[in-house]
Image 1 (cartoon, one colour):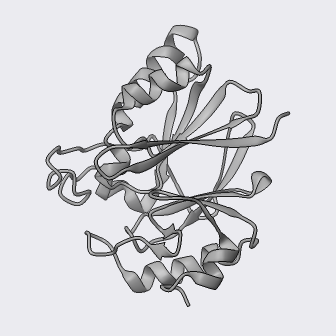
Image 2 (cartoon, one colour):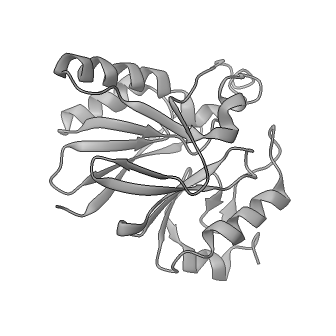
Length: 220
């Protein structure tokens, strides 16, 4: 069984990171935060020999979900044709309201109203297993009430969404945001992970937990 790898597409007006995780040599991929143009995401993965088996959302802001419904529809058309189980979308249960409200998820203000849903709403600490890859849900409210991160312990990978950036943190001036809550989430849920954990944020370059503990000015 090959090691877990992670790839990235940078998409949309906010240059949002859309990730896909797969095992080296494998064909099944988990997509995280389909930021925009979901049909293009599907086509790019298919062209490179991947089949989408699940979609994870770190949170419900417009720039992380604009491509969701197109990607889900394209992936499910393929699974139906092949007689496979439908592809499911996972999100933290506290994000349900924001996903379905175009004002709360800021898509209306951004010029393209989007209301959507997850197929499975998960809880803090819950384990998700897709394509022989396991991750643990870490609820990290603050950027939004239902924001979360996905920790792939085997690979030492944390997909952090807009909770934690390289030497920065997510903004908290949108609906359900709270800076105090965000910093507490980072310290209590993320900074307890091994220092060499590689962090893949929703925008910008990757970092490590150890570097952020030492250098992040928002979490000192």
